[in-house]
Length: 264
Image (cartoon, helix red, strand yellow):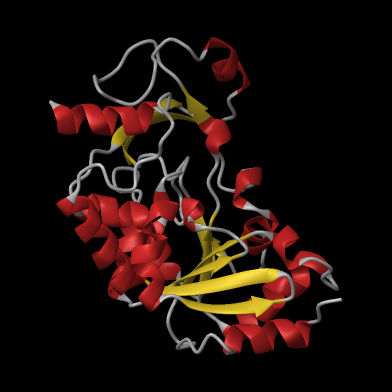
């Protein structure tokens, strides 16, 4: 059974500067038999990295309109059933289950703050200024500040397909973004700057191998990458090949829109 001491030892073995902010993506299941479950994992994480944050996105607020801008990576008028189930955004709304147990536990931590985007919020401890940078028209602004702070991305038992910081690399490279809509108390609001699909991001792994630090903690492979170097590498890939890091699903509407823009 994996213990708190083994977790903290593993995190320290990554050799990261503990004063820099860390954006975490995690799978609790990847750690196997963990004494205390997510609470112990979060406790070990914050004891080593006092400035930690995680995505707490709320996709349940999203609605699909009947019409909208062209080349927007979505089929308008197809959300009748889903729209009826959409939830009005509120600041204490639980993170989507896709974010993982740890992200929701972090959001509920008494020292945690949360950004206010109705779809793409983040929560964290000791990163108030980074979180405050996020605006409804600039959802990836905290990733820019993480880049400027020379922070890290920590992938705990997960791959780059959940590595949201690579969306900032896409933005730097000039890749197309999209518009989405979220329910707020006063109605649906437009949320520009919505990023593309991330299911092709694992294609970046070979190019990031030289800057990736890895440790095995229990059954989980934990990888850390410096944000600045990672973003520069990924942005260069996209600039040199406008189709780089797109997924291979022919039905993917967002990757299809990006390809269409490149071809035309």
